Length: 186
Image (cartoon, rainbow, N blue to C red; front, side, top):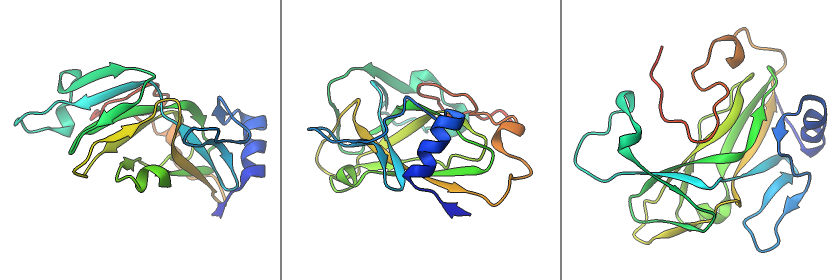
């Protein structure tokens, strides 16, 4: 397995439309950076957010509904208060080749502010927009800026195609767009 760089990412975008929309440079002008970097791609968070409602009821990952969430759409900064948990989505849509895996990690600007940006890996053959999980474990509110960078994707290419890439196993998060809640169909 090999870590891939900006030249390889550009080639995959040209040949396979791997990231859409694709920004072929690092955008920084007064924003939290996004776009192509030396060894990855910084994705942006969209304008729709789902805040987990507060309450005493047990939150069951097998039985989530939209009633557990409050939805907000805005291009203005949102505020995550202490212990808030919020879902968002990437503006970019990904089409991962069957021999490529992506690890996504939060950007250092947010990490140094206390924000936890959580992702699950992008498996070979997966396609869709990332659902982004945000949490604030600090005792101070944190601003999150829609349409700006939120995380970095790091690409790894396997030596060969896996026996069961995501697109061949009827993955439950295949082709997801926008915010996708937990699914438990097996």
